[in-house]
Image (cartoon, rainbow, N blue to C red; front, side, top):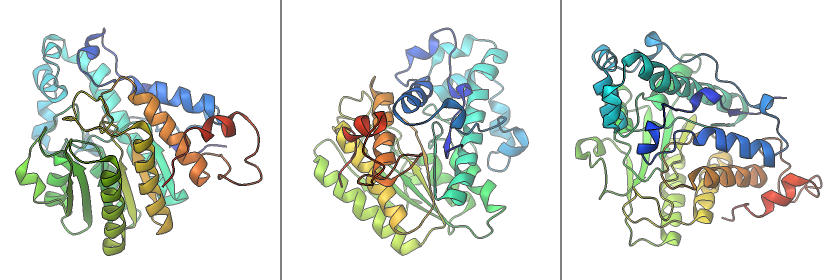
Length: 342
């Protein structure tokens, strides 16, 4: 029986080792999927395959024709991915090795939104391209998967209101720009980020309903409390029909691109549990996407957090903590060490 966990091996990006010049681990998705299948009572065939990548007609629902045309240039793709060496590669290689995986991840986020509305929750082991907007990309974010997914599910759920909780350490400027352009009233954004680092988009921040600024001098306890307060208030005040959770792990201590933020691995797990607990308490369907994370152990931290969520809330076929069924087995033993406390 399938579980609402979306993944495809096609998410992983490889092109002759050049991808390793960027700190983002573009193959972390397969590591996370493998760890979850090893430590949960899951087989790879129980994960939901997203299907075929989105096509240009799908992308035009959010993106401008001019932006999509610009991505037919290797130089433009190199700028979006922040990897100058890509500019010298033939476009046909970048189409198959970079753009196609990104379009597949968009389909995965669409599928996760569908599954969340059907089952109450879902996780896409990819996606979260929060710097991309209708007319631009950047920061390794090519397509606006969250807004594409939202507009996709609105067709079958007219009037659906979406709450975006963006906890990647970088400002989700693409999300804010698309909210202002497309859905100023139907979308509410909570964005917790370090304002001292990329992208510093002052104009986009005006469209964020609840910005939460945090810097290196903020304690982990204060950070977690601020997240709990913001998410709870947003759910109570906005009353969304869907929560899209952009769960970047670049808040992790030692991440090279977070400006000195120092949240522990346990803190990442507690943060994710706070968001899931708030959504489930309010009976709001939640779809989680992975977004950024540049520390070498990012994949392991994501895996541990999802394992903790599975045990805490009885997800992905794991009995809830404290149930009679949760007494023996590999999952019970290994999840115990990673279960978050809130």
